[in-house]
Length: 481
Image (cartoon, rainbow, N blue to C red; front, side, top):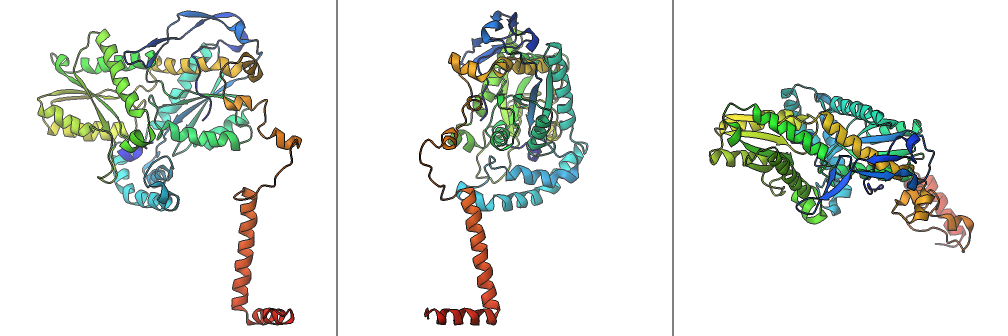
């Protein structure tokens, strides 16, 4: 069901480095990444040991504090009774474009309420058809535990936290917990292989606000914006696709069509906001096709997008996965292997939409073998790729900010702010200070209270003739009438 997959800054991840255990900083260790160029010029990161980096050149930090790892996801209602509130949370998200900007400020919440009311019954029915309980949170918790184990094996003291965008545990809950745990360094890893403003971007927007509003938010933070080009991710996906092809009836695997299916996105994001999602999805297909060819698998392949909803005039990225299934069947394809290319755990989009709706459509169109590749879950190779992107962020997080400033290396604004408070000039009173005016928070409070007082007095005078008579007498005595 599309409703359960929402179509959905801090320091971006810098040059890939891998951090040893903080106790080992200053010694020579193997660097676990090397950068190579893909056929279209995009960066392909390798997880293999290939270079040696002398971490002594990065400075002795003596930093042995644990690092926090925040996993971001869309979230899902845990049971059917949660559906209505979940849908309301989704469509209240300002990053989900449901109205023109001029109308959004007034009608966003009423529209979200209307959608949640009208779509809830259908969504609950879909959820019940898929078993009644979403496995999403349980799977992410298992992924977090497996990721922590991999980091511990590498000598990294990591604490893993989970932040959902539209359901519990929310980002606010996760951030308050990591603050309570004394986390001062944070690596943020969205559980979306490809970046979109509507998914990763929406969650990062919430964290950006908290960075400046929540006392104690870790000042040293890095974000891994996308990891669709990680060899560990590609390798794990390749093995799952190979296994699904091998499960087809004997003699049919070679002619099966590989159909990649990704979460859909309105074209408005790509055309008006330059969202990179569609480009990254297409590049993911290219990289997986190349990986399969290296394994001797040269099956035909195509790409579709699922989860479209809303008014017909709203244009989405095409083709849709159902349309692609129908097209393949009309061309005589009888074996299809469906690959969830943008999902890394099971949820309603895989259990209901793929396994039920798409499978039924395939049978109806005459496709005799329809196999869906499972999501990655806790696949060790995949978890290892995520652990690597965390490890690569640690050297920059461990180096003191002033050292980076002295060395002239790129750094994030929040690290500079550790040493340079932006309002220091005002505090030092070096120049005459102007009083704030206009739409400041304090002015708004004062104006609001004055307005309420005026309204109260006006109502009281209108309702009470005695007060009205007193005002008349006062004005006469002052000669105002």
